[in-house]
Image 1 (cartoon, rainbow, N blue to C red):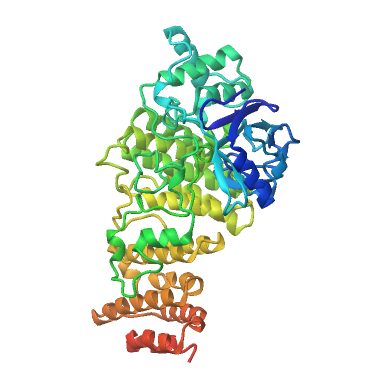
Image 2: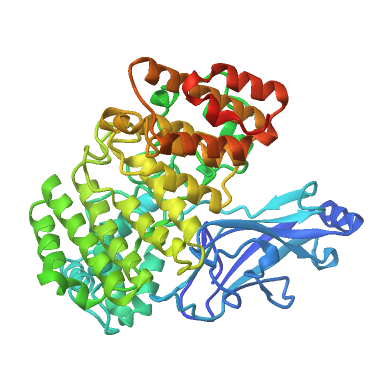
Length: 558
């Protein structure tokens, strides 16, 4: 199949091919030969395993896209990745250069994968850093023009029944893992081709698959996002549940620093309430949130709905009948109980993740139906923290070393929670995130210094508000959020964060507060880990701001 639009969807049974062409000037080919190097730059989605996705340039032997050196494989989540494949300069031609992408084998990621997408492609004449990049010039597919393949009432009804009621492969009906109506597939603009091929993967006939796709296309809902654009991805263009797009994911930690505080590091003097002016729904991040593929449960087991007297089935049915906040809370509570039971009885960490993913999909749809996309709405206060709960299931798996890449997946889900709840990033002081856990996961996942500093700043402010303020003088207060940034940020940032904390500590004590032994131990631990990176003058500047009650906690690094 020759591509006419982007992305290139290499989706279908093993052996599926998609062809694209890039034209080169003779001078481009000469430049590559003179430099002695050339490459094929790609941005792709859903490449999880070696031997499943390949490319050939000008009929040369196929190259495995998932070789680690190319940077295109995402074995834990299949999300968007970019990289360069080296190309022999003499393989380039003046004029037409033919690319053939091939899906070569079925990847059994529990529910199975049906292919991959190529979002962008370019030939690079010269080194990846300095060479000229000649891009694939195809228009983006426009979902606004999509229509049912068969718009007759009979075809739409057959497709609805296929989606909501039928199974051809022994698994659940499509609607069990998706939004009940299939709205997620329309909302995230899954192409008609991908709908048909995915239905064929689940062993529907070609006619049934086309009816199913026609049903999805008939839904009274405009496409808002894309399959490769993570829900809620923060950025200035964030809108509704669609997110700001894959392009909103920042490339460098320095980019985040500029977005957060306009420079390379936090200002030397930061008020305690600095984070009150920050909306993490629109502040972009280096963390790529999970795409919709990773929201969908990879398996669905019948016994989830009969455990604990069928509480999950009952509350799901009530949520569908009466989509109130109370129904959503009850459904989330039921999913948590069932997930805990799966983990307790079977030790199945993956199973608990899937139970919570199932709940997250249904609650995403509840949020959408109850007004999340309205400019004045978002999630109501005390609404179920469903991204957090999926993240926490991964967090438990990370602690037990039970699932590969669990730390990174935890962080992605928890950043989705940071961006969305409650409202659209605006805090009420009852946020479900435990920022000690967030910082620990961020450090384990290799998050860079600027974002570690931000998480400390936001989390310490968040956890000093409302009733949480009563923990200040204990080991459970914001003092426990100092350790990670004190060992993971530059010296100047450590000084800024410690001085900010000590100013607030002094205010707390002046108002009659007291500190327990656990608080002192936490402060001494953070100082001990971070003070060696500070100069003598920097240590003195920090100690000068400390109230007398904590002088003993700052004795390290004399």
